[in-house]
Length: 348
Image 1 (cartoon, rainbow, N blue to C red):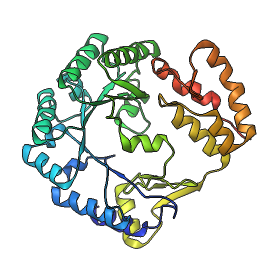
Image 2 (image 1 turned 180 degrees about the vertical axis):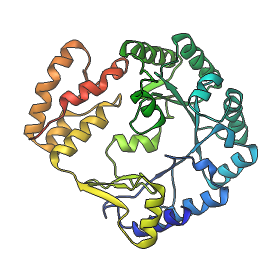
Image 3 (image 1 turned 60 degrees about the vertical axis):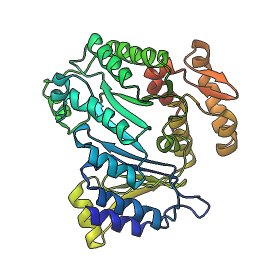
């Protein structure tokens, strides 16, 4: 796998448009990169900087399981230039962790944050999950209170999504798992929003909360439609005009690269697709979207369509207008999917 990742980087050195300044952030994630030894991470990091001609990275994030973060490993990560950790805590309940098939304990989760701080990491984020069938409001409140005691500058909280062909998806098909109803899910979301915003966090994207100045630079680039490149199985890339996604199966991905066969699919984005993506990514953030930008980049037809369709939401307060931007108030982020979908332009 390591060889395949290095090979893919070499093949894609010219992916970014000539006018692009190249990446300024790097994110190790999407799997379990904390399984890699420091020497392996160093090789990947240095190769990426060399291939894509990047002298300095402003943000280098590594996703990690709590039980992988020993003091020695943390010290090694910091020495490599990794300056942000995303720790997959998910829950502080041993019962819920076991249900999620997580191998760490609540004590390990708490200790991993403390050890990361002691090692010198100031920029930390933790992941939490809510909206799963066995989670009750009081338990969710306790999880949030525990998260606040850790005083990390960034928290990502995701509602459980039951995907087909996964363990939870198969259980749902057999009737062994019933998704949480929408009303209870919304109550848990509102508790999340009010608890963290009252504690000083900015709810800057549907699933993300940050102390001022600690918003994720890497993820924010996605939401601002900046070009990015993804390396590895299932990785997605965007260069401004087309999108590419790699084979999801590890063996198929590595075999294709070894044999010189296609390892990805791609599509060129039409104006309508680019407009819909702008709406999707922009309205998931507290910043929102700009009608003037829609007019400039997509034309009067798209601007008029957008203006007509936002009026009902402006009247109900589910959309707001400020400083020439249209945005969803964060307390309404829970229904953002429905709002965004209704603003898509669908062509025949």
